[in-house]
Every structure is written in C-alpha cells, then in structure tokens.
Length: 223
Image (cartoon, rainbow, N blue to C red; front, side):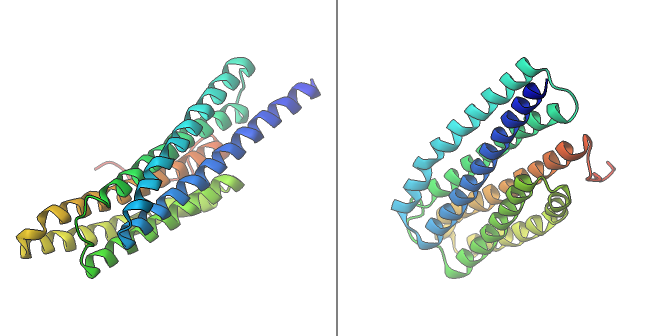
C-alpha cells in the first residue's frame, strides 16, 4: 500500500513540475513577443510564433497523463483535484501561448513601428500582463493559494490599463486616417494582452480550487 501511495505522489509531483515548466515557457514566450513588437523585430517575432508548437505539445502530453492518472488511479479528494487543476492550468497556459503567438504575428504586419506614445502604452500593458502571468506561475509552483488570490484581486489593474491604451489607439486612429491599418493591429494586440490577463486569473482560481476543493475567491454577485 505504501508503495502505491508513493507512486501516486511521484506521478502527481511530476505532473506538477511539468505544468510549472510549461508556465515558465509561456511567460518567456509572452515577454519575447512584447519585446519583438517594441523593437519592431520581424525575425524575433517569427521565432516566437514558431516556438508556440512546443507549448501545444506540452499541453497535449499533460492532458494525456492527467486523464490516464484519473482513469487508472481513480483518485479521490486532493489526489483528484491535482490532475484536474494541472490539466486545466495547462490548457490556460497553452492559450496564453496562442495569444503571444498572435501578438508576434502582428508585428511584421505593422508596416512601420508604431508611434512612440502608442508603443509605450502597449509596452506598459504588456509588462503588467507578463508580471501577473509570472506571479501566477510562481503561485502554482509553490501551491500558494494566497498569492494566487492576490493575482486575481489585481486583475482590475489590467482591465483599467487595457481600456486606457485602447482609447489612446482609437484617438490616434480618428486623428490620422492613414494610421487606421496599423492602429487596428495595435487594438488586436492590446486585446490579446487583456485576454492573457484573464487566463492568469483562471489559473489563480484553479490554484485555489486545488488547495481548498472550493474557491478562496469571492466572485462578484450577479446584478
């Protein structure tokens, strides 16, 4: 029996480590995509887009192992929440990678580098989103539900900055019709960043679920 318990612990630990590695890669991809955009570096952007396949592969493998663990071990309580949280966290990280790839793919579509003021706003939003994603990955690594809750509570910071940058871009479009094509790409980039922030929040909730079996997060009441 002790051998079985040890085997279960080892499987779950390995699954947890691999999701953490996937999280670090997702953060690296996002930071690289933002950097490529700010430097208007088409080659670096293409590299980010190409490397997204690795996150897809990791997500598929983690899902396979999590489902296999549940099917063979038929776990209960904590041992059931762990593979579910790992699988869903990997899904959110894979989506973050897709969104980072989308940001990278828009960089070469910008015929010229964006205006410095607009680039600065997008860069600030990108830095904030990358910071939140990095924080939630760290919280997953240490199974820190309190740190995860903090990430969730700060999600409004991303929403507010996104709205500010979004309106800056719209204002630039209205003032210069020739900038509409490039500004449209900027709008998509800012939206992709905001959605990555949403995925970071999803991961925070999963960390709380794994730790407690419920939610440490009090959701706003529906109006």
